[in-house]
Figure 1: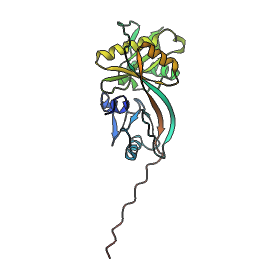
Figure 2: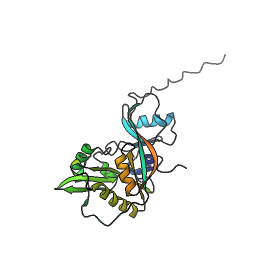
Figure 3: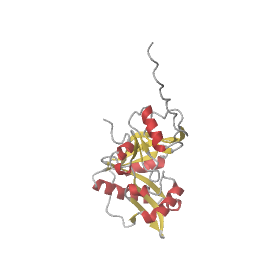
Figure 4: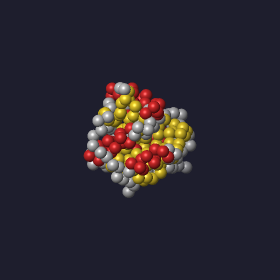
Length: 242
């Protein structure tokens, strides 16, 4: 059997985030205002891709994590890149951090603004509903944040790790991650995260904190075919036997 993190979006939508799942056939996705991620079975066939196209609608956009087979003809690749998946292998956590605050619905405008400027990955109006999101403020303004995204059984992904350019170098990201890891462990889960493979600075930080590289992974954003596949013509009446 495959590991839950080999197909993390599918594991999440059939596990801890099953309540978010939108489904057609064997294809699943998160609501479009939560995160753009969708999932297919391991080694999907043409029927699975057709299910996903129906789920997203003609010309719809979505993102896949870890899918390697590639879509059939008619799909458009919008973006693709290599990433790495890291897991908690002994991150050191301390006690409560008085600077770290819980973020919620009232903070969404600031969260959207910060992520739009720092670009840690997709963050949408309802992304905060996926789990715990934490932040650090200075002068009343949100200057750093991090939170939880995918939730395969036994695992919780840390995501949206970002710091305002004017406050880099203060260790805010590592402080937020340590608090998140402590909370994830307290629930009996193990933390994991993803990073772009070329972001060597972030990967070094995570490894120095106690994360270990598990495997490389592929991220792709795609657009479904603009039109629904034409239906097969109905068979006419059988010709009588001669």
